[in-house]
Image 1 (tube, one colour):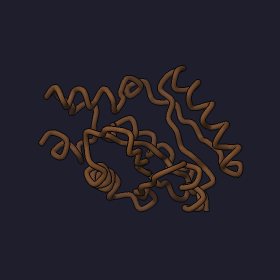
Image 2 (cartoon, rainbow, N blue to C red):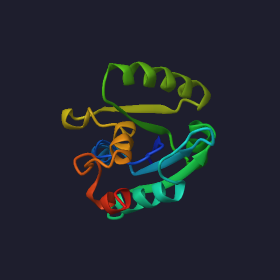
Image 3 (cartoon, one colour):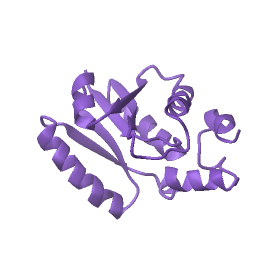
Length: 155
């Protein structure tokens, strides 16, 4: 069984994240969208809210599962039996950063393979960081987040 983990903070999940997962579905038997918990990081949405958002977005696809983890992503992948990491690339900066991380993960993760998908142009400008700022500023976020979580995000 080909299992991939798509790790992130998903604070909040964006249309770019959803597009990436949907494009990866034909490549894997199971994709685990996993919220990484970092106690040093300050989040806009609680862990429970982020997990609920992910569950709502992927409710109709039984190949996509939602999880959470603390610590190294490679350890979570081992626990889940995942041999692949799914990552998105929006630009050259993402590539430089992700390339280094993937090489380290390959070494310490027993040859864990990272599969990169390049963002579609219409999503390459979207990041959770920017979306958080729009939410904090009470701006319109409809074009950046999945419709399934609009009510959760704009409460």
